[in-house]
Amino acid sequence: MVLPCRKTTVGNIEINVAPLETVSLRLLLQDDENECTKLYRAARVLGFFYLDVSDSESYLADVERLYSITERYFAQSEEDLMKDFRADDEFRGFKGGKNWGSLEILRDDVTSSEVPLPVKIQPDSTTVQRFISASHDIVYVILHQLSGSLWPGSRNHFENKHHPTKQNNSSLKVYRGPALARLSDVGDNSHTDGGSLTLLYTDKWGTQIELPWSKEWAWVEAKPGHAIVNIGDTLQTLSGGRLYSCRHRVSQPVDGFEERWAVTYFLRPENGTSLVPLLPNCT
Image 1 (cartoon, rainbow, N blue to C red):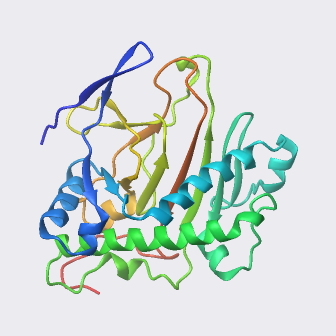
Image 2 (cartoon, rainbow, N blue to C red):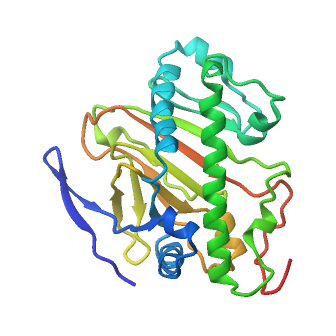
């Protein structure tokens, strides 16, 4: 299915805007048949879609707080940031360099309280806990509805690979994106997400996706009150390739674009999960 891009202008540059579908969380919670069909179509065709969470005012307020928390965190000196660096841990701590970087906090660490939050984040622990809890509930709604579309009437469910009480690497990850003087200075960081589902909140241009029907790159517009959601490699594999994990990258549309912040939640399967395609009526 070839869907047309929309054109818009950023600065003096015309860019292509990716044709993402919009899915309502409220309607998914109501098991609305049309909305579940739309979700399944988006997950199969492009693997990226908007999730309308505008009814969740307290949740969106926490997203806004996390933007401010992220900005304060990255205002620290490089020496202080490096105190949170974990060279031997892919899923925890600070990663980055001058004027850019990320901080990742595992859901398991927050729910167990066994690993302390970074010192700069500790005063905001309640916001972090609420966001992680609510985001985990949201991705489970998506998992449930996709399972029903893939295997109607079956005992097969993605949730069987994502037990919430079993150890896993689901996480909150916040980003600081640099304002580079030249677009040409942006390195190649194209990738697919290795996990199951990603929720992304941002208020600026920063994500491009590779359109599967043309292999051209198109921008994902940031929309207030909406998460940008994408399917990861895990769901593509478990679905036998029926869901699509789309290649994407982080960039900026023009020279000298604004510094930007992003808040993400990554759902990952329980540790030790066998990543082979699920079959109908399998548990």
